[in-house]
Length: 106
Image (cartoon, rainbow, N blue to C red; front, top):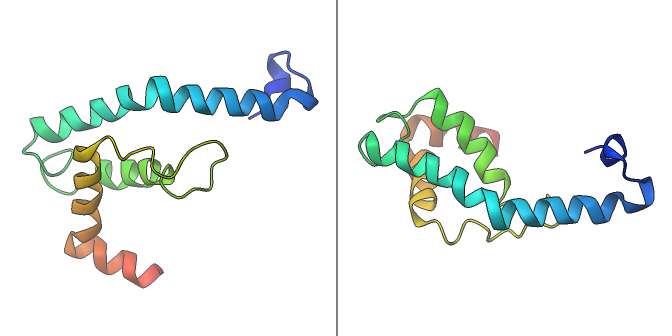
């Protein structure tokens, strides 16, 4: 988040951030979500390691960040083309132990 470290000026920072984030969503996000999808499919089709694990919880925080609308230039619907990921998010959210914890923090 410091484009000036890479030769950009402070007045071009917003444009650089916009370009980087849009390119990430367009070019790289699908590749990374594909890795997660492959792990879910390989391990039974519900969670990354077959059953709810710390891997799911860590990835859940990272992946759902994209759906919150708090990152500039990242559309909240950027995961809509990834139904396996959306199903996995729902599986994590509705797993009883996580659901109880999540509800207590809301």
